[in-house]
Image (cartoon, rainbow, N blue to C red; front, side, top):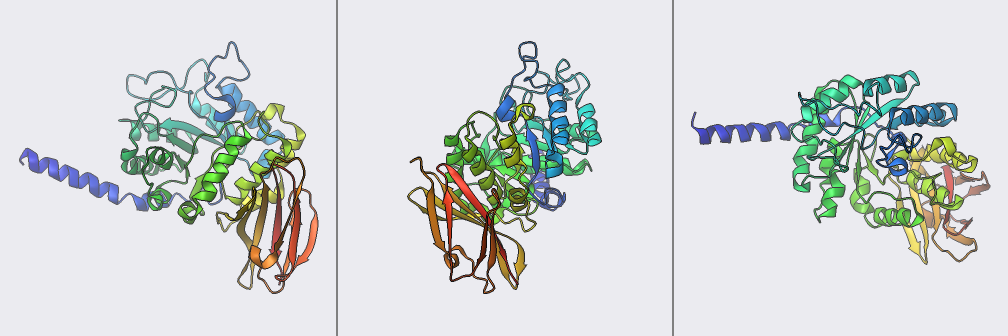
Length: 417
């Protein structure tokens, strides 16, 4: 066969394989509700100096301690189950056969040991790689090793893969991320697939194909890395509100928009701002992946993170991403349809966000029918943070709530029969 025809045949074959990958990527059956757990990056970054920072470096000890806290402090019972390693866990170079290995000083027992430990606790282990020549912090990337790394992660018993996108070209991601998902499926070991695919495309002005992304990823990042500040959270909220009509239709059971980690319990948020992040992420049907130090978590922040009512909104089986329905004078209202559905009328989580800094709570009074509360039998409305009962609210009534500065009030309006 002539070389030009051989090359053309190979190209056609590769395109055929890529085009037919979607059936595999859609059916891993995982993340039917937004994943919940803990992730190392925002709080612990790429701290690899275990001599100077023995309690804060990226090491097997850190992940074991966080897993123990997840179990002993009630987080597992609240639904948090993933313990996720981020960047900087590897050796600086691959083995001669191309295999990845963890840093032997910081992970002396290996990654399979960690996965087995998590599984013994009823938890799951996540790991990090990068769709590039290097990871964001300069460790070996996945280019030319996709199949081998997928098999390695499966052999180790890893339950989630976060695939970052540093040191790569966003134009290659529409094929590359699909190809890696295919390799994960071929291992026969199911792993939640967390992608950074749309973020890097948006960063260079490309319009992500969310229909394609949602078919091949269980969750995906869209915006900048979260930082330990209220300003960072507000920028994320703005991005999701301003782009909700593009992104929200592609979220649902098995595939979620990811606004990044929960930073509650660190240094940058007040008590009210912490409640705001938890409530907004719940209404967005976002993954709840904490990045904090569970060994030094104040009780009030623990209570926010384990709030059963707010978590139930996040984990609602309908999987509908909530939307902003009102924005004026730094007051916002967000609405998420949830169960139960009575006679065709959804129940709702309603979030009232006060972004003012004038030092006094603001009363927000709204007609119930303008909030979408149209069930003729009315709704039983309860505050999810303080348990306050607003009673029965009919479509012709008004709902009035008080909202603290840089804070939220979130209520559940349950449709009545």
